[in-house]
Image (cartoon, rainbow, N blue to C red):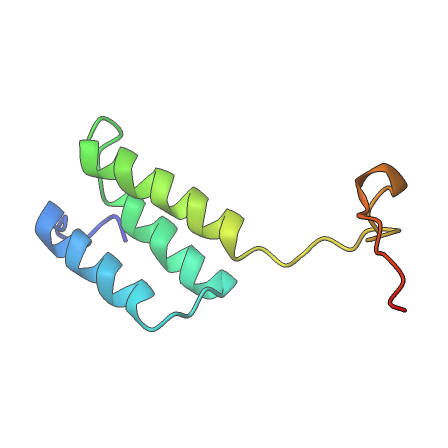
Length: 84
């Protein structure tokens, strides 16, 4: 987005809200968010806040990692009494 006129903090904040309002958390949406962040100066407080928010959104909406075993360790399982 660099090269054209710089966006104001207010315009970036509005675009950010619109971007995530639909609930689309695809890589394309994250790339657009990164482009909005690039419009802000590195020392801008809005950039720091939105960067942290983006990291949190990525963490929350990352695809679940496939593990070898999703079972709980035996010492964490509750013992269930047999029904009689």
